[in-house]
Amino acid sequence: MIIDSFIKIRGNQRKRDLMMEKTKKYVNKIKKKFSIKQMKRLFNRFKDLNVLIIGDTIIDQYVFTAIKGRAIKDPILSVEYTYHETYPGGVLAIANHISDFVKKIKLVTLVGDTRPKLNFIKKSIKKNIDLKVFTKKDAHTTVKKRYIDFYRNNKLFKVEYMNDRPITEALSSEIIQFLHKEIPKYDLVIIGDFGHGFINEDIRNKLEECSKFLALNAQSNSANMGYNYPNLYKKPDFISMSEDELRLPLSRRFEEIDKVVKEGRTTFKLNNFLVTSGKRGCVYLNKGKIFKAPILTSSVKDTVGAGDTLFAIASLCAYSKADNELIPFIGNCAGGIAANIMGNKESITKESLLAFVREVLK
Ligand SMILES: Nc1ncnc2c1ncn2[C@@H]1O[C@H](COP(=O)(O)OP(=O)(O)OP(=O)(O)O)[C@@H](O)[C@H]1O
Ligand SMILES: [Mg+2]
Image (cartoon, rainbow, N blue to C red; front, side, top):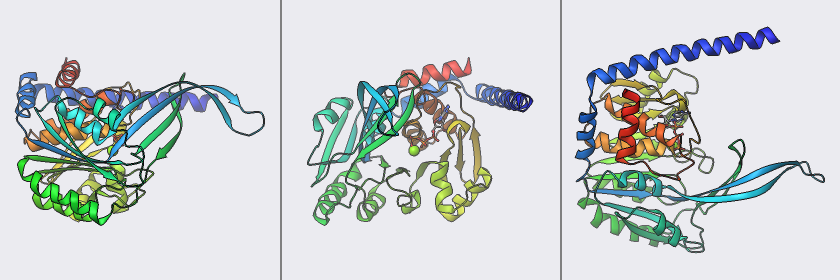
């Protein structure tokens, strides 16, 4: 038993050393090819972009608790409330991440009429975000409440408040009319589709018909279980998706990722997409060529929202036709920063991204 676990530890250590070696090689390659100045120049190119962001609003509540133990009368865990924090999530987080890179953003989203939480939304989005809100009847603005063991930083469970039934035809027409007039004004449309009852087929078609460049993240989560795959969209110019969001619609659970990425390209007729694999980094495919990047930090606080952060920054890079190697590198830098922020408590900035890049390339 002891020998067994010793071998396991030694095995893991060897694996870790190998990964470190690979990461070092990768970082050296990036260092040789790109300078910080080049990256700064790329970020400066984002400044004048006209961006419209559309998608589901999510309000993330983190309830921190102290674990007391098993309740006496029921076989349940008893915890004591310590404090809670509320963060802007979903499309609010995506808009906040982009806000420091561009002058102005139009944000289009949906709230519920019973508890719109508009004051919180307005207060938590950055000043250069111009908000256009549509309202769904008999609905709660989506709130995801996570209970956390404060000492160990482990999540205990999550409660979701939402009405993800389809919107009415009247509301859908109102949104489509608005989009028809509005979208042509923007260079880049970013969709954060969390599948919580906002973007329907008609809205999707309108977005695809009118956008000059469409960047997409269609999230799979416990609430939409298989009803919100990225291949619902027919012609996005750039997609960022998690490995599951690619594997599930293809039913390829265990196959090697390169093979699955290539299959995704042909099956879904995609030329430009990025697949994130959590602590295994990401894979970017452009016109049939694959570019892989490992994670660039070993510390992790909370990975909720890491994929959205990467998506936000990678969309700007993809629109600006950044070098194929730079897109997954900068993406993983953004993801690495986000993995060390509790939920969507803070958003990424040009300065924090450059500081992270500097640290990696040091
Ligand atoms: N454990 C980790 N350590 C370091 N970086 C990480 C870790 N997990 C995620 N990341 C970074 O964040 C990126 C996105 O992560 P992930 O694949 O988990 O996204 P996701 O599941 O879409 O997340 P979400 O939907 O909550 O935003 C990764 O490609 C990587 O750059
Ligand atoms: Mg995601």
